[in-house]
Length: 315
Image (cartoon, rainbow, N blue to C red; front, side, top):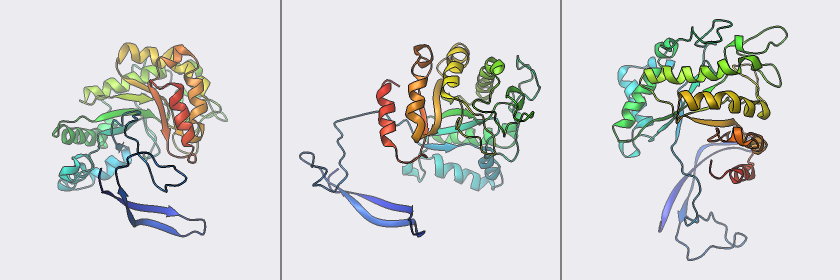
């Protein structure tokens, strides 16, 4: 680390309305220190590499329907170039991505709502489309497989996790007499009677993708469980989430999809701590959670992240 320089590029919006857009800033110089410097006397970022925390398993992005549609519009050459630039190693001119998110059903980056079992009352999911035809035809599955192939060439593996924005409308509670994937009852959108079918739905989705040659590393219970703002959504309280995982999603995935991880919350930093306290309060729910997902909205609130980690440092 002696005399290492770090390139800095800043994008910022200031109170007066002015902005910096990808502005080149003076580089930071990193030097080895004999001992830590008093933070009040030393205007610097200090990295103590004698202390270690959680392992960063990878960086990546979401394989949304919008991304796949636009990728398919490119020429074969440009499709391959996009995959190379994202998933090839940095030594080969890529970003080295190894992590990906896959929506379960449509999301806010879908042209229209869709799901894989739109038959009202199909509690046993006999009509679930195990071919995931929609995701194949719009290009999501081919795009993921192209990324897998690129990553495997350098001896790495694409780690994928799946997240629902909304269950099928028929599994949800009505809002003003109507059910829909883009609306949600409050405080919870999922009909309590549909908890087991919805848990089985995750398992069916995982199996369907596996049949396409795509394995899931994990799932989150719900994308942004506190938000219902006009696109696919389903509100959850932390208490309802814990009960659902304890009694339904946890047991189903443990039996049918062993090894697939379950991540709770999946929303903003400002409320992550209060959710973690509830999700981990019941040992019979906690045992099924492998960790807490967080979005980088909701203010700085880094103390919430530290305290969340301290509640369950093994997660």
